[in-house]
Amino acid sequence: MIWVIVSVVVATATVVGVLATVFTLSTSRRARPELGPRPPPGPLPSTEGAPAPPPRPGAVDGTWNAMIAGGGLFGAMGGTVNATFGRMDVVSGVLSFTRDGATGPDWSTPCTLLRVRQLGALVAKGDVELNGPMGQVRCTVSREHVNRFTQNGFKDMREQGYAREFVHAALSHGAVYG
Image 1 (cartoon, rainbow, N blue to C red):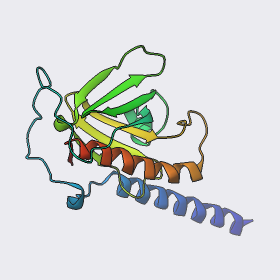
Image 2: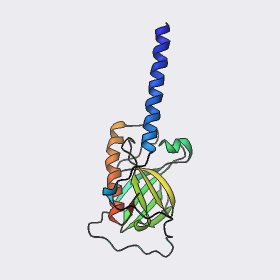
Image 3: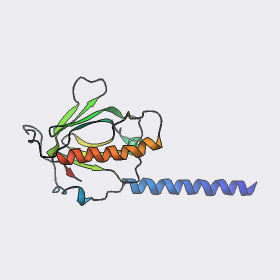
Image 4: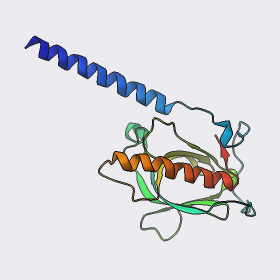
C-alpha cells in the first residue's frame, strides 16, 4: 500500500515539474532575426491618418480563423474562457479582426504599424502575439475551425504551420518581427 502512495506522489511531482517547465519555456521570448528586422524600442506610431502602404512585390494576402485569448491565467495558458472568436484578414497591407457575427471589423490597422511574432515552439497551437495600435493581442490562428470546447493534438500541430503563414503574410506587408 505504501508503494502505491509513493508512486502517486512521485508521478504527481513529475507531472507538475514537466508542466511548469513547459509553461516557463513557452512564455519566454526568443528573438528570431532571420524573420525580419527588430523595431526600435518605444511606442508604435498612431494609425490616425495613416494610409495603407502600397502593395509590396510578393506580398501575401489571406484569411485565418482566429481566437483572441481572454485575460487572466486561462488566457495566458491558451484557454477559451473569455476568448473572442472571429476572423483575421490580411488584405492589401491592412490587418483586421472581425468577431463572429459582426457586420464589420472590430479593429483594423496597417501592417506597417505592427509587431508580430509566433510564440515558442513548445506552444502546440498556432499562437501569435500582435503589438500595435490595438494593443497587445495574443491569438490562435488557423485555416480550420478553431476548437472552442475540445482539443485535437494533430490539429494543434497543423495550426503551427498556419501561424507561420499568418506571420509571413503580416511581415510581407511591412510588419516587423518582435
